[in-house]
Image (tube, rainbow, N blue to C red; front, side, top):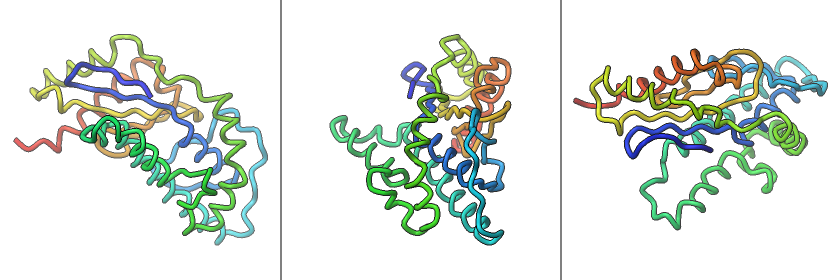
Length: 219
């Protein structure tokens, strides 16, 4: 995870392992869940996906995976936005680990997925391959050493006449196919690596993400 910004506006970017392993398990299971917040398939995924036994099983597995994905993104995004900032500094590492473990716990055999036995079994089966895929395909997310974040943040502050501390964003960069992005909730943007490195597109989507959190401000 990388953070940019002054003491006021802030941007956090990540391409963490958990999100990619979750997507790897989806693709390995051959699932096709529906939703605007569902990224395209992973790049360079060459393994033959499993075939669900029947349409009903595929529907159940897709629903379970979608629930897992949305919980994972909610926790990951909140951590990037600083949900633990008010804790004493010596308590934050354990609190961070506990939060992640509540949605991604391979070393505990995915107890967090106990309500979805079929998905849990698939996660246990595929997560190590997902880690290997991530190491090979999900490179560093900190590609914007440019002035784009600073320029965009200052433009939002000026145009919207808001105090800088309200201008915050968390960007989760995913090694998925195509030029794709979606603001999943205020201040949290998912985007493909292709969209992230396209400076024009990224600047536009980052501005929209900063602005998405401003509706929460009460005048």
